[in-house]
Length: 124
Image 1 (cartoon, rainbow, N blue to C red):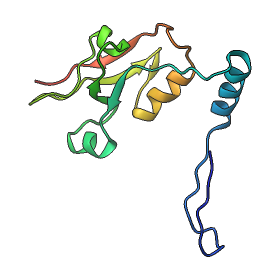
Image 2: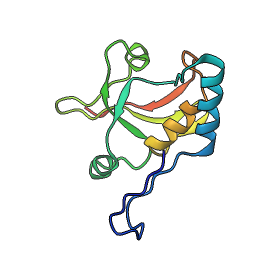
Image 3: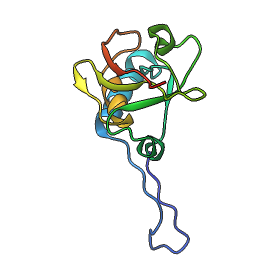
């Protein structure tokens, strides 16, 4: 997905790109299955500015856990009144420094595939 919006013809707009690994994976999935299926934990991560303000130096803080999701079944806890969410600090033997690391690791997995996670439990 890439686009440049310009009214002047100078191409001074916004450009977007998709990594080639993602494109190759999605094309192969569409050819073999007719659709793209992606792994998901079923969570929403806290934005970087919020984790920075809260003093989370590394990892991906969970802001919301969807009902019935793999994350809920695994017992991952979201932010709540007076409580920070769990912070994912490792997945499948890889360190997690940010939300983006979680997505990179999930892109290498198939839906339904088990993986180990390391969490820092929310402070109370």
